Length: 145
Image (cartoon, rainbow, N blue to C red; front, side, top):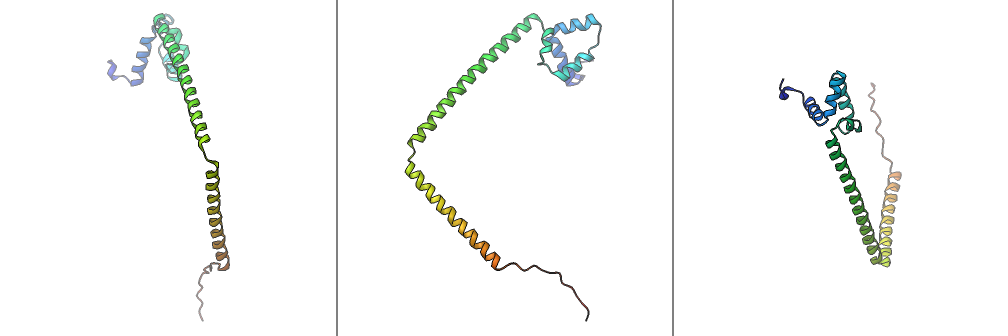
């Protein structure tokens, strides 16, 4: 059967097995089938640490070097984000120092006045509504005389 006729997940598992040659050796030595390993691969995924034992020595070294490089990059990214955070904090503090508190207080006072006017309008509308309650429509009954 050619590889093109296989289900895509089985093709992926075959590639995974090629990257883990010790897995092939174990299956041949134990004369076990591939099914349990395939099920474990489907459930755990390729990145599970339990597969490290089946990698070739060279592949395992490359894998650990890649993980170390990734950790170093993560630390650098974290340091950069801390520096960016400090820069942002300094900018905010600079803007706060430039704020004119008198102007800010004036704006707040005007906003408060506008809110009071809105509150009065709502109160007037509710007063008018209470004075003239809406007439509820009652059902019309027809009677014979």
